[in-house]
Image 1 (cartoon, one colour):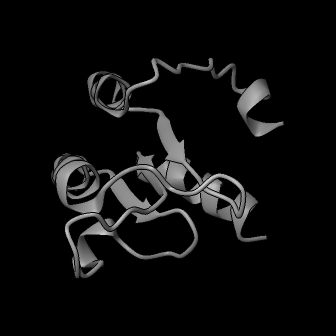
Image 2 (cartoon, one colour):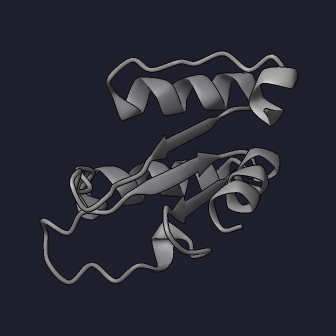
Length: 103
């Protein structure tokens, strides 16, 4: 309901980089790539998540794991194919995500 009343628009290009670029340009927005038991996480921590997470956090945003309030930059890379779900965005939008997902 929050997203609709504030007139958010769905943007999904099929690629994380263009969607995160869009967030950086607008200084607003959220990118999530959540997983489930039937749909495993696809984004690799070493090659995709950590580099863009660093850019987001350096720009003043939040880059957190999908299932806990922890920065993706604090996740230990113990093998090169480690994958995880993420939530990237401004602190306001990520806080709203946490309210909804962790309620």
